[in-house]
Image (cartoon, rainbow, N blue to C red; front, side, top):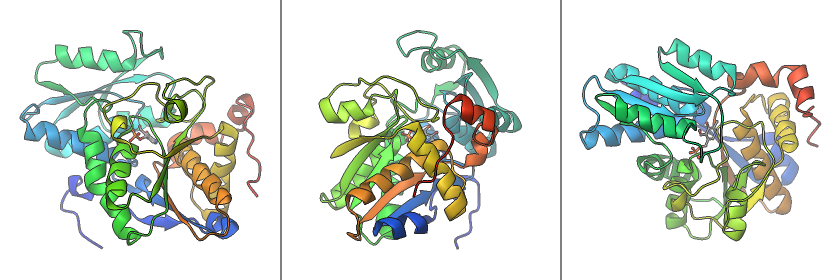
Length: 328
Ligand SMILES: Cc1ncc(COP(=O)(O)O)c(C=O)c1O
């Protein structure tokens, strides 16, 4: 085990875990990258590091400066986790309908959060546009802009992709992942396809997001909604544009929830909703390639404890009509 001399250095190099129950049932090898073990508890620590690194390098982020971001929570937590050690302030805009645990974590980290009403992206009051304005109005501030700042996908190209390649010694048949900003899929798929063009990349998507339709027919359509947090997008971001994708799959909230409780009970991993959606996508690909011994990799983006107030609340599950069923 390597030693880290700072929180900064402890981002990434996460374990890659074979999901025994899913692998044995399908006759494939399903691996999840344990991104919940990053210091801020999610895959977004990588994006935060890439973005801060780039802003320091181009001189836009100076000593004592402020980082402004619009976030569903995890990017803000990642930025705050890394900013503390380096002496930056963090100011966030965030929709007010996210899991309470994320606001609690941000409060613990001493970050200013402007919780705003959720609205369509075209509305100037969307948390994304509010963050852009706030950054402009704040002296010495930079806007992290995880969606359009390509330092996000770049760090996945530089770290996540090579880690997966090394951990599986290049034996990867499928990469499957959902998108929030598109950074993870953009950077990782570009790296892995460059190493081996035969690797099949499948974009996963919850209902209410346009990524599935975009890769299937070139348009960001798609209706409905999803209880998943941190994933789903209806526009082509500068990070998503890097993604090299062969196919797309939509995953229902019910299937995601079945997987969430399956891995908790059968694999000892209580994961967040995007991780469960990713694992369901991996499972579906494995079922389509049953007993082939194929290797499928995905991301376990954050931990279920970040959503415990919802996931472990029977009335919330009932209200959402999402009572978990056995997967098999
Ligand atoms: C829990 C969770 N999973 C997945 C993602 C998606 O990652 P990306 O933004 O790299 O597409 C996010 C992004 O915020 C997230 O918070």
